[in-house]
Image (tube, one colour):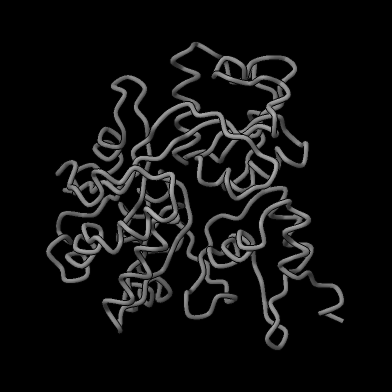
Amino acid sequence: MQEENSLTPEEVAGILKIAKNTVYELIKRGELPAYRIGRKLRVDPKDVEIFRKQGKNFEFIQKDNPVQRIELRPQVPASSPKEADFHSQGLIICGQDLILDILARHLESNFNTLQTFRYHVGSFTGLSALYQGKADMVGIHLWDGDTGEYNISYVRHLLPSIPTVIVHLAIRMQGFYVLRGNPKNIQEWKDLARPDIRFINREKGCGTRVLLDEQLRRFKLSSQAINGYEREEHSHLAVASAVVRGEADVALGNEKASLQVRGVDFISLQKERYELVIKKESIEKPQFKAVMKILQSTEFKAELQGLGDYDLAETGRIIAEL
């Protein structure tokens, strides 16, 4: 009976209008729960509907068991056995880009006994986890509209008195997701306030939401003028899928995710710096030395280059020591 009521990855791809491989990636990342019946992977229709409406947050997948969901929430006390167990087993890496998944795989290949735990959350939540000792590394992309710079001012203010190192990962392109052909001719930030435009937003605290809010401040646009500003999803794929389904006319996200959703065009707006934050006290530990070696290796960069849409000229370079 359970199998009769479940969906295959192919069926989920059809419902969400995304590629089948993207469904497997969502399951791997923990954004879409799944389970096995024999050797077959299945998804509960209720979880597909939850993902479609709300996205998935505060969850990640253990790599060796890609259908076992493990939760790590920011409110877990630092002294809890659950958190202690995670730290004894391996590294917790926060951030939502595929680069971090590839880094985790390379780390596990270099350290046979090391497990990495991926925590797919936004930049603010990741920095909070690092501050509270609940994460080891955080990928962030936080734009400061006053200086035009990424990340440094936010790390200074959100990690007070904690010496940190910021390591560059890649430059990505942020822009609008619109329906193929851009039927409403959406081109610039000011278009979001048009009365005929329906927007769908990202969650508070993620780098994409910060970029939007900083640009609204810069152009003196009120969020109240944007139809759909209060409606949130928790991933680039979720907002892109909402555009294809006709639930919104436009969303904001990175270029790579747009290539995974059929029927979406991408309108380039701004290059962003995606970077890794590590506590300075950790940087001399073997596993973190391995992180730096991997980031600077030709093998790692070649794998990212094969994915396309990343500028890797500065990958592995220490940008700042704060």
